[in-house]
Length: 123
Image 1 (cartoon, one colour):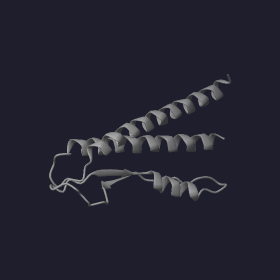
Image 2 (tube, rainbow, N blue to C red):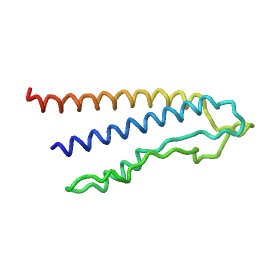
Image 3 (cartoon, rainbow, N blue to C red):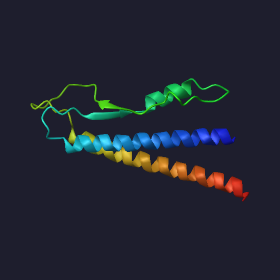
């Protein structure tokens, strides 16, 4: 049971790190909305995590291959003359969604810590 709790906390922690990295990427995109030729930055994590969870066995989950990736968006298309592909409305929406996701993850993480403390204290 403790190993399962550790895995849950590890996944929550990794998801929070990915969310923080995503927040930095979105902030960079917003800051460079008027920079000619700028290509928006993206962060990947969920696909790598899903692949690890798909490979889970009765023995457990191997999270060693799960990584947070950062890079430029694959879509090179830009409808703007200056070849910048940042859409301010999309970035603001992504910023809001990411903020809500981070808050939910932090809440889950704190709840897990409280449950562990209650189990240790025997209350």
